[in-house]
Length: 113
Image 1: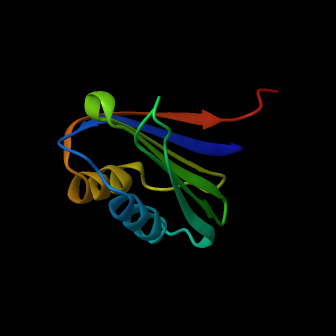
Image 2 (image 1 turned 90 degrees about the horizontal axis):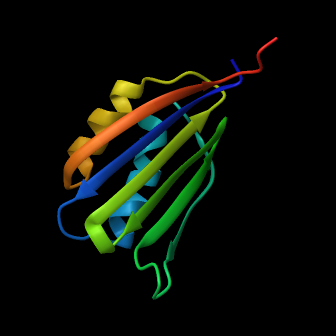
């Protein structure tokens, strides 16, 4: 296995602000046994795509979050070269974000021989 890529998509109730995105990006790595190497960095989207985008570089790869004010959508990617507990990620997100609906899928990244 090269890595594990968890993709989480959802609908949020109301708006999620920059502070909430930063808090998730600071806390989530420790929840899955990872260490932050750099970040988080959070930026506001432009007028054509309002919302927030944030990411943090973790010891074995990255976590990113994208919010979209139109439709209240949120997309979160957690990728790591080291296995992690996907259930712990989902439980954490459900406890920290105002999620109305949530779906997830995991891809094991590998090179087929």
